[in-house]
Amino acid sequence: MNSPYGLQVTESCLICKLRHAGFFCDLPKPSLEDLEKIKYASAYPQGAVLFVEGQAPRGIYIVCSGRVKLSTTSRDGKTLILRIAEAGEVLGLHATVSGKTYELTAESLQPCQLDFIRRDDFLKFLQNHGDACLRAAQHLSQNCQSAYEMIRSLGLSHSVSEKVARLLLEWASDGDTTKDGIRIKVSLTHEEIAQLIGTSRETVTRVLGEFREKNLAQLHGSTLLIRNKAGLEKLVGA
Image 1 (tube, rainbow, N blue to C red):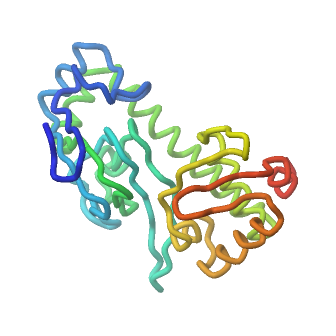
Image 2 (image 1 turned 180 degrees about the vertical axis):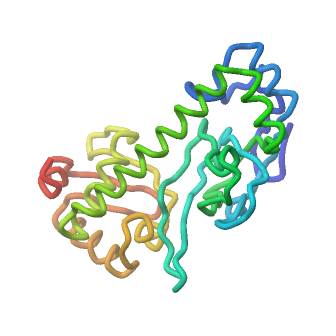
């Protein structure tokens, strides 16, 4: 099914070409067939807010394609992006299972396809399918591990330069190696990068300028080129 956002929306998980390894995408066929009966496939434009921090849980979203940023905001309006969710991940799982409010705000970074499952339907699905229940526990564990890693990165980094270098090195694992260096597509603004590492936009712009002058890395538009990975690793003590 075509959507207004240039996406090829796949209604059925059973024939989906976007399926990813892990979690609910590769459940055994009987479980997947029951999941198919309770999900709703939809396309969302860039900047769509799926749910808001403090909102009562309506259910979960499965990211089929695209990327979604998960953020939290302090009382004084400061925003911190906790992570960027990729295709195959489940959003709102903790709140849906626990019955507590969504702890984060989820907003699409680009046009996305997401499958929505209402809370009551999802909880019944978990009760009836032990394999899906295990996948949910694994997903919650991974989210917890990601939170630990983020806290360690923010808490143990001695400078903003080190924080930015750590972030670029994380992205490098998904980049393409070229003769000029590692090339990565980045759909984040300087402001959003700042929100990922807990600093200001001006500071991120300054540090990226220093990296460019030192020929470590260069961000031009949405393309990041890491020219000297070893130099970035030296900054973080890797």
